[in-house]
Length: 166
Length: 250
Image: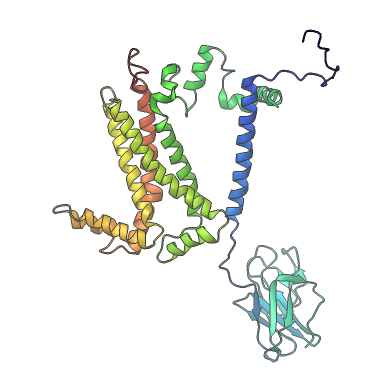
């Protein structure tokens, strides 16, 4: 027993500064509370994001194309959308002013779309004539359903030069 | 990490914002420790010094503090549940079902609130028995005993009013039975029941009344009385402790 040789000389790296029991407990407590806090915040964020919405559908049908004469602008009040028919085809323009969200009005006598709140003016294709609106009125995706009705998707915004040929 | 946190805290202490909030140096002497307690709204009613004996688990089993902790949990989960709950028939029932099956983590929050409420009734009763058998109602604690009884009643009323809110069969019949017990009071019984329900049947008015009681009036009363209760514990000389020769026996 007494003549047992010492083991190989192994280095375990530089010794770390000693951590007191109080510091160790403080660290794991703060760490645990931090993890619990982050998890709680994440769960609360999930909770506040509804999984089911009871809002009106953003896609709607606008009837058959023949309801709209050529060179006409029709305001659909319930959907807050203009259905515009030109000789080239159909497009759907939002009626919500890009300034502060008021509902614009179609003025056939002046051939403009005008906002009653702050006087912004737009062409029937949504292009801005004068401010304070910063952007033109956006165009929504419009297509024909299998049974021949126009259908507008208000979540899908398309370029202003695209028209639906019927 | 501990040193880094320590250094950050030390640097914060030198900033003008920190000094404007705390208006004192580090609590390292008995005097500065006292100032730290007296100068803090949330701690000023705490004693500056505590007997070690009164911090032992056996002294109170922390039953009062645990009841407070449950009250805080119930307030937080309750406020979160209010974001998805409409106190109207029959929407209330559908909202409760949505919280269980549709809303993310809704079932967790609802069960935390429900089981927490059951536990709180249990703990508050346990607390009362513990204080009773230790003679905690004797002078100079008589007033705080009365406040405690009021808090017990508020806990029971909170539990009862919350019982109706899911608007299911259990809720309906529990409140039907409970309010019929009210009407057994002589002379004024029927009038009290009529006012409590806002009608003759357990209907929409009753649901709304129980909701307002449950989320506004009773919690505010509880909050107020909990403040008085904890403050009086200190002002009446701390927890009821046994004399030295009896401590540890029985």
